[in-house]
Amino acid sequence: MPALTAFQQTFAQGLLNPESTLREHFGVGFSVYQNTVAKGLVDVLRANYPTVEQLVGAQWFDSAALQYTHEHLPTQPALALYGEHFAAFIAAPAQLHGLHYLSSVALLDRLWTETHFAADACVLTAASLQAIAPEQLPTLNLRWHPALRVAWLPNAAASIWQHNRPPASPPEEFAISDVEEGLLFTRPHGAVIALPVHRAEYEFLQQLAAGLTLGDAATAVLEQHGDADVASMLAKLIQAGAFAALV
Amino acid sequence: MNKITAGLSFKPEYFDAALFCTAAGMWYEIHPENYMIAGGPRLAMLDAIAAQHAVSVHGVGLSLASAELPDAVHLKRLAEVVKRTDASLVSEHLAWSVNSGNYFPDLLPFPRNREALQCIARNIDIAQNALQRRILIENPSLYVQLQHDYSEAEFLTELVNRTGCGLLVDVNNAYISAHNVGGNASAYLARLPAHAIGEIHLAGHAPDADTDLLIDTHGAAVSEAVWSLYSELIERIGARPTLIERDDNLPAFDALLNERERAAQLLIDADVGRALSPTGTEMSGNAEAAKPDLQGVTACLR
Image 1 (cartoon, rainbow over the protein chains, first blue to last red):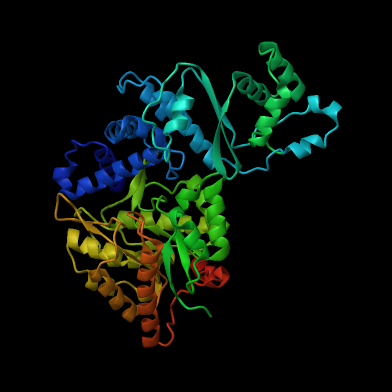
Image 2: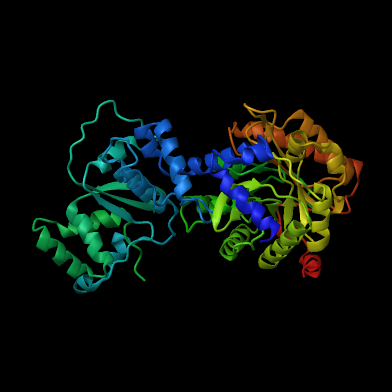
């Protein structure tokens, strides 16, 4: 093996190991590199999961984030989307934080980030839909805007996330009810917005994503949710910038 | 012809002040890795800045000092940011950060020997070919003593000769390295080839809490010792685009403008001292005028 390769492999392995003997070999300066790497990665996770840190505090967050970096090193230098497995990681039994909804909150932080950095595209407007002949509407295929993300969660994580996501300061008292909740993220005017959705709206979006026409998606939703008002749902989603402009 | 001026690190926190800043010849430096994203407000911010000001693209992730080849996908994305911003300058580091497919967000050291020289020259060639332009290579801040066959100045000079790359001289890094691993920063700077120097960085540092080391924090004002080395350097080589580099512990934008003004004044003094710098690199509002001569670079590529 070339000497430079061997040097870099040894150095890289030592960077992640707090007990590494390379510190004796290279001197105290080696820990400067160890600290810089650890801080760099933990800071990216901190930026990408601010609501998780808000809920568990910096000490628990730093410890979990550091452990995550050891198991999931980035594979390339663009770190805007680093931490994609963090929600699953903190759901593991080894991560004892005692908050059953924490992984769901992490998922919502993740979706916020994905929406924030997603590709640009023109949004579908109500006006452009109104210009289409009414009989053609049911045959339309509505495409999700690239920045649309939506989650349905088996707990109250969406409310918790909305009350705790910085810069919001956490409420002094917050009653957690264990109802299922949905939240969607879009970027209709540049900034990310989060909007609660009902189960029917969530399913409607899933049907459209699966390739059903507007008419078929509406029928499928009405089969499950007889009282759903599809026209209102569609108006709400369009106003939120959920769909890409028709091509 | 526009004057060679001083610029600032661009941070989203400063967006409004940075965008509308009317200081003559203001330019901004960005880390391209932060903009390797599909879309959204961060890219819109970059586009707005690049439409108003010259931009210098300063990479941290190319890992030129790796035994491995530069990552082709990363190079392509770097080229996209360079194109998007119509970058006036493009720079990277004499360091590595990638090993066996893992990225370590730091600028890591290596023994300066013949093998490293060959690898790095090869990697700079690959990068310059992919980007179709000359890049500047920055001297690192060092924290460990390794077994070297070349001094850093010799090593950088060899890279310039072999690849046609330019140099980005970080005066603060030179100061820190001399403190941490020995040497004389002033003597080191005096040995760097003036004709190759295309940009200068000035930044603040801090003493490590646990050791005698100085840390390159980019989190404080430029120290007087570094200002003094800077004056000495530009008196020798003439004016060069100079960045006040600040990434942490961000002060009010005006505080950075004051530091930038100090550098700008020293650049004017250096220009007065040397009526016309024959080798100076322009950093102008007109990015076209500032682009390095590709013909000369291509001739040096092999």
